[in-house]
Structure formats: structure tokens, C-alpha cells
Length: 443
Ligand SMILES: *[C@@H]1O[C@H](CO)[C@@H](O)[C@H](O)[C@H]1NC(C)=O
Image (cartoon, rainbow, N blue to C red; front, top):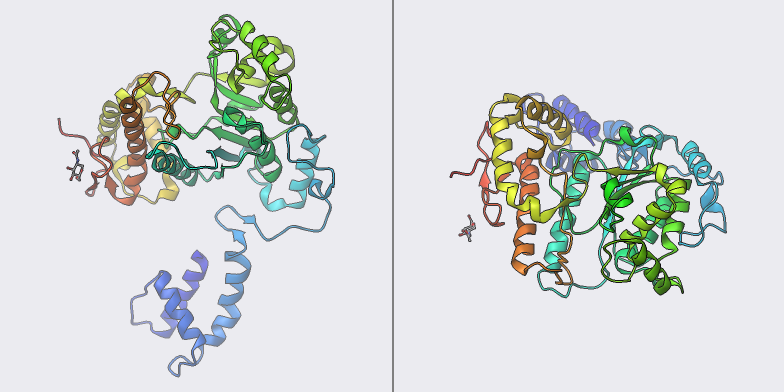
């Protein structure tokens, strides 16, 4: 659209050079109106429009995702994996030679080629029906908004899944068939970033260091020691992970699903998995204990491609971080106060530039990495929708989420000129004066 507006603006100048130019939607709309009405004062305008503006609008601005140069209107007749009658989007029917098939598709869709090697798609979702808890739906909306904000800032696509692609793989197992189908729907994406609905991006600046995972296909938060020595089912957290869109993952998902509720041996697997762990309280196998089981029993097969990450919070434990959000807000405000560039107003689209400046300023401030905003704060054991909390009070869960959501939202709202001074009061909102990029709460 930018180029069209520029052209329109230039035309306005030609028509009436004495008037200041209004560049914006209303201006374009007015011009359109003028173009298509036989207005005697502008005899040449419709001719100019026909030759220069209209083809631009059709071929560039509506058809391509112009910001990223994707050609969204191009799908040649050449056969790809999509034309194979035997192709299945479901678990239980892994695609063969998926890497070659993906590569072939990309060859036919060259506009997706640039940047394909680290393209990320965020996958999240919730159950198809309304929440039991009356405020659950509002929370789910805000939890989703948080993910949409994060994706918009970093140019990631997002898919919110609220169906069960496999009728029996419900509850925590729902992510497996979801990933399986998304891999095929998005051959242009290299990584599927699964994020549980109750996990909140609380550092809007941070991006997973994909370069570090170039030899791995699954990245999950955890501690190798807790998996391999302690044999704990909490050794990893399967609520947030990156999985590469490749043949390995196609096969890994099948191996993982072997223990799922869709198999006739589900109960038997429950016993086997529980007996392998040292701390599994109930003999019902969930996706996380199944993942630990695979790591413990089939390390040779899968372990070398699985990166257990703990250098940043891919799945930060909420009960720990919620207490720190006020202090962290002040900490970052203090850093910003010392760096003029960080207090400069800017377009949201260029946020990554300021993220890099902040990252450097953080290091220069001599702060400990423990004082960093957690990348993701995960509300494990707080179920916002069902209203069940394993061992936590309603208040702790709701207040915690409120705080985390507002802490994250403040990082977004600053680019819109506002801030919430009170993290526990969603209604509170202040305009940010010039020269301020955050708000330091008065003590
Ligand atoms: C929350 O903020 C609004 C707007 O600033 C204010 O009117 C209201 O009293 C605040 N609520 C609480 C509980 O502090």
C-alpha cells in the first residue's frame, strides 16, 4: 500500500501543488471517489489512475504479503505432495520423504525461499467449547492476544487450533495431531513453536536463538540431569517447545503418540511409564511423561536431536516470576532512563532494533541474567478455563495471570503511547509523555 499512497500523494501534488498532502486512508478513499466520478475540475485524473494506480493495487498490494515479499497468489499446476491422493494429515500415517517433498514445494514457490531456514509458526489453541469458569473465556482471549502481539512484533505466523484433529487425542495430547497437520499446512515454516494457552510471552523482545539449534529438531525446556539421573517426569516441560518441520519430527511424533489415549494399550503404557519415573504420582501417561520416557528408553534413537534448554525461560515457572514483575518493570525503566535511544518513540515494526539496543544496555548495566525478564511465564497447574488448580488458590492463579499479562502488555502498549502503571489493575492506563518509554511506579 505504501507505494500506492506515495503515487497518489505525488498525483495530489500535481493536481494541486499549493495544498498540503494528506497521506492516509481517507486521502486514498477521496482520490478513489474523484477518480471514478466524472469530475470536471480534474480532467486527467482517471486516465492517470487507469494506467498507473489500478494495476499496482491489483497485482502487488492485494496478492502479496508485501512486507515479507511472499507471493500469496501463486500456486502453479506442477504436482506437489498436495496432489498425492494418499496424503494424510492425521497421526498414524506419517508422510515419507517429507524433507524432499517440502523442498520440492519450496522450489515451486520461490517467494517463500528467502528466510525459509528459520521461519517460525506459533501454534497454540484451546478446547472447542466455552470455559467452565466464567472468567476463563476472557482470560483465553487475553492469553491469545499476548501471542498475537508477540507474533506481530517478530513477523511470525500463528495458528490457533480449537478442534481435536484426533477424536481420542484430547487434553494434553491434542498438540500432537495439531503439529502433525500444521507441518503439512505450512511447508514454508521450518519451526513449529508449540505454546500452551496458559503460557505467556513476558519478554516481547526475546527471540529463540535458532542458530544454536541448527543440529537439533526439538527444543524443550528442562534439565538433562533431572531426566537422565533423577528420572523425573518434570525433567522437561512439554507445554512449550520448538519442533522442526522435517521427516525426523514426522517420525518422532508417531513414536511419541504410541503411548497416547488413542491406543488400546493406553493403560498398560501408563503402568510402564510410571514405573520408569521416580516421581509419577498417577499411572496415567500424559504427553510430558511420554516424552521423558522416550528420552530415557530411546536416547540413542532420538536424544541426539533433542535440545534440553535452560539458558533462558522457555517455560518459566509462574509462581516464582509473578513476584518479580514489579521489580523487573522498575529495573528495565532504570536501564531505559540511562539510554536516550531507548526512550525514543518508534514504529512497532522496527521493535527488533530497539530490542537489540536494550539487550546491549542490559549487559552494560552489569545486571545479572537472573534479573532478565523471563521469555515465557508458564502457568503450570493453573487451568484458566476449567477452573481447576492443582494446589493453588483461585486468587494466586488469577492475580498471577493478570500481572503477567499486563507486564507483557506494557511492552506492547508503549508503542501505542500508553502504559498501565498498576500491573494488577487492568483498567488503569496512562499516556506516556515524550521522552519516556516506560513508567516507573512511585514508591
Ligand atoms: C483501577 O484503575 C482505574 C483507572 O485508573 C481506577 O478508577 C480504579 O479505582 C482502579 N482500581 C483499583 C482497585 O485500584
